[in-house]
Image 1 (cartoon, each protein chain N blue to C red):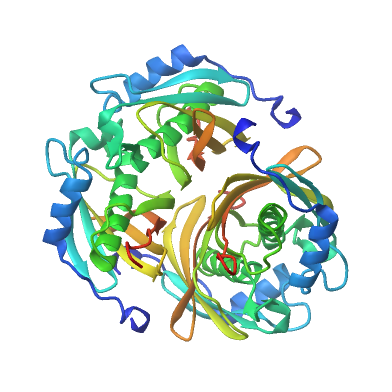
Image 2: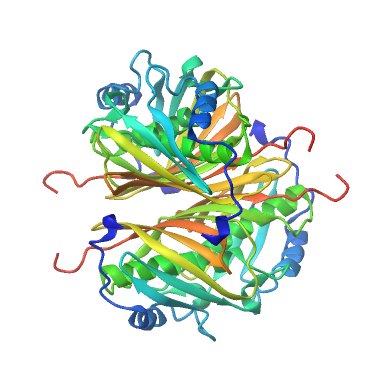
Length: 148
Length: 148
Length: 148
Length: 148
């Protein structure tokens, strides 16, 4: 959309995944459950490969696992569009849970709504097999760059 | 999108506007500031024709006026897709304000994320001149239909 | 509470009401529907004197009227604790509607959760006759002071 | 407060912890990181004993770990006040992150704002050493009881 034409990624999914691996070593301790699959102008797609560790009773993916995916999606948006500053922090996330997800890939399609100097606002639609599982909106605080 | 293919409006913008006029007479007391401009499968577009009464200092459209637009957008989604039940009520709205809007038309593009038997979840991107002004996500509670 | 001991109001309810009257002339065009009733260390109480203009069908206070109360509550928190800077703007509000309110006074008890240099986070419990009507959490952006 | 006088827990912290252990075996796989410390009329206190596994760079407790605490707090509220129905699910959580928490106990003080037949709304103030770390508001959906 025209409003996003000014948003240009400064790095791709592979580079982002390397940075996330350094920033969140706890995230993928044993396996690489969460990762970026695509960075595009104005957003990204992140994926959770949900296995038994992410499930709750009823064999559905837990709320915290979906929240983590939405949170990482925002982090990937900031990293890829604003540059590698691992100190960006989440200030707010609102998440609605709508349908159950089962073990397997769960995708979070993230769109930057605003990228300002000190705040980024984004939303993240979480889907599985074309169904909307959850939807989140969040804000990341971007610290001033050294020297600016 | 495929996930919305089952959503079919049961009435159009004109009929919705008549119902809103009855349900919210306070909304457009003097003028017709808020109205539906389009109903489509899975969502709708609503509009605020912002004038001096909706502004705050700095000549920008006030937060409550934008919130009202997002709230009405959800109401139009429920009415148009679930039928004319004026007793549906908002249970939650989360809204992020991103840019300033000035007097003139402000559009809210609403998309139904889930339409269940008792809850509807939707989001609403509020724009002016192609810029995202605000973004809301909300939930409406749908009362059981008489006889069901 | 100990965490709020450092929060000291710099002005009281009367002075805040004068400033709000200047900043939001549209708010109380005809009557003085919204006003601050108390400022205390770490928060404030604001009131809506709901009359027919704030009602929706079923004679209940409308969602936008309650949202406006919560928004003003945050504005009063910023004004009273951070100083008279009418340019502070709402960046996010999340509101849950729980019970119906009728015409008459509706109170919003606001508590500052964090007052930083650039952001204030607060919550607001909206009650009528001892019942919780709605609950909001919000963030105001505080612009840098001139010369700082 | 008077509005909560009707809320009476039907079980205490110990019984709740047993049920959570069954419902969320993934939660405390190795250690007992999350647990209820107190159930009181109208709410509960839950605790995260944050260790290295819950930290992100800068040695601060991660957002998902705090979200998990807030989510469990709501679950404990439902379980303790509405009875042992492990099928209750989160429909919405809004969380604001305000300060950093370090390794050690982090408490979530939860208060039920509304306990209806089909929905429970609550808030959760997350603190460490008397400082507010994060604040969440959430909604749980309560399924109809068999036979009702």
